[in-house]
Every structure is written in C-alpha cells, then in structure tokens.
Length: 72
Ligand code: 9UX
Image (tube, rainbow, N blue to C red; front, top):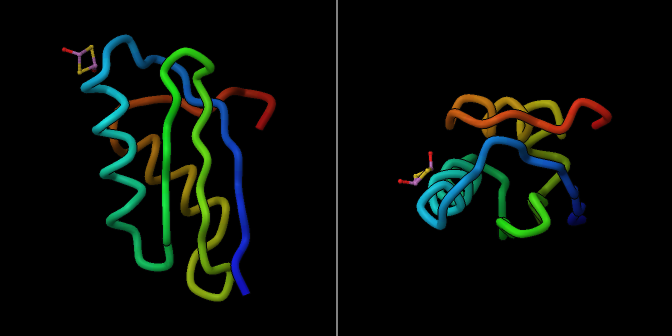
C-alpha cells in the first residue's frame, strides 16, 4: 500500500533549496518518490505508510532547514 502526501514548504529561494528538500525526503526509509516545486512551494511525496508517518516526513523537511506551511 502506498500513500501520497502534499506539503507546503516555506523558505525555499533557489533551485538548490529544492534539491536539499528532495534529498532529505528521499533518504527517509519508506519514501518512494519526492518532488518539490519551487514556484508553488509544494512537496509531493509517495511513501509507504507502514514504514513512515506524515509527521516523520514533515520532521525530515524541517531538519533539512525549511518550514512546513502552518496550516498543514
Ligand atoms: Mo540557494 Mo536555498 O544558494 O537555502 S540553496 S537559497
């Protein structure tokens, strides 16, 4: 079973920021795919809910140096 999570990510200002967030997410166990859009400030994540929780995915983004949109 795979799940998808969309997150608002704040604080990204250049393409390298996008790469940092994508790498941080992809190295989490249970993440199958992570794409981040700088213009829309959205991350789209496909993951295994049995292995990783949405809270852990948010924590990985924060640990990479960026913030999750407050409403999510
Ligand atoms: Mo670009 Mo993002 O030099 O933290 S990497 S602004």
